Image (spheres, rainbow, N blue to C red):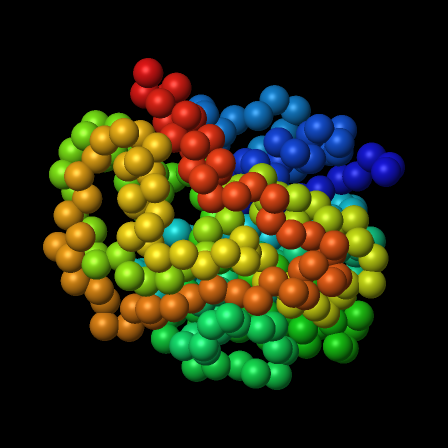
Length: 304
């Protein structure tokens, strides 16, 4: 494959870092765009880092060029409790980016969507462009508006947008405020830690599998206008995941039932992954036990 130029917005985040790392292995020219410099643990040699807020159109036009082959949009404010910032960074950012590249030479614009776009639709969730659910969070609304905008740009101008909807992604170097890093940290320290009842059913996908799916989407032709779920295809309760981690570590004292579930918490949230298999010839390869072992080993080395 020829050398490519790729722009990764949100390139200093968990998924962006791993994607940039993979693209460097292909000897691609990688540009990361984010609001902050990368943390030391996520700084990569040979990546061009640009500090820019995608929701600020003037800043965007000034700071980036339009001659990339690929754009992967992972940008977005991570604290979803702040409504205005969430809408600006996710929807306005996506709008600015897509309009900036509308008449450019890019061959693929991947929008990283979310399972939250399905609202309370029953699992397994299938991709259906016309079956919009009322999503209950501002984050979900921002992501769904972004999807609608991109499908509209595809329909009107043949804009090469593809929406990848992710479920729960985990692995080394993840931010520590997520369920798996929190559990690993407490288990390694053999601490008591509060949990919900843990009976929510979720889908966890190892980071390497997610990056593989993104790369396959970039390389595959004739995907414009598609929405594709990416998940392991193996739904599991959060309780089981927590217990697996404690078992791998050999310690940890989860206190199930000490945290009340949110009123709007969805009990069962997992995808159909048939479309990913059909269109991308992709399926998750790293089973949960192996992925958790790799993740635990990473945190042990880091804290060792």
